Image 1 (tube, helix red, strand yellow):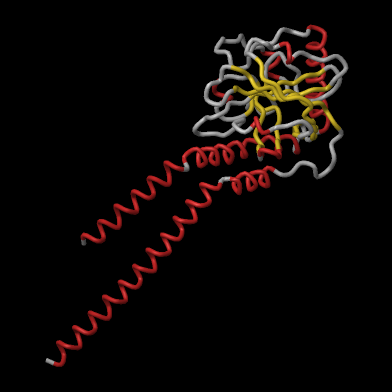
Image 2 (tube, one colour):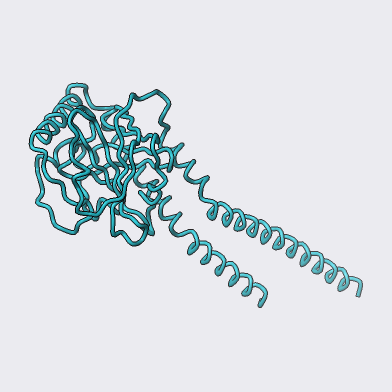
Length: 293
């Protein structure tokens, strides 16, 4: 009886240690699966939409971008705590299911594939990638500069935690309204939060900038990954599920600890089976001895 209790306690301690050790990875995995369903829902809405309606959404976004290019508004820090007045016109651009999703961002180098939401509210940045209001809608075109933001170091989601790995000539992709736009990194820089001039529209250019906080865990500055539009080559990007598998294969701590857990479970099952067989043999011997008497 004591050995059973000891075995249960050891198992519980190991499971608790496993969960604690892998909580950030498991949290990110859960978030990616949950947000993957959001992307699947978005893709389904796009593919079942008639061509006329799709063109209308695209045209509305293009007109919005043209207005921004004329006005060239001053952008604020994406991570400031200041409350922004809701812009009804902005919130309706590419908001097909009233879910706030306008597309998806794929970064192969860091195995990221997440939905792009309207705005940079705390609710948005805790689950996916936010689009900075006042910057261009990410549909491409001359005189556009879309700014996409994400957190680092959240315990429940990785998001832009590995954005510092991006270098010049790395590519990422924006999937929007059934189209894929490719962007190539041309500069990576660190600026102060108030230095938002780096996010302004560059005349005649088609840009996207990815923004997150830096240094990791301190967050006093902003890491900017600037990219220009390049021709999209078929098969350059991959599916969301492929990105998820690539990400999982990089999680060495999870893979090693899971392997150890599986081996311990197999060992426990084998040992338990042997103990049952041993008890049966003992029981048979005792039964045989009682019969002879």
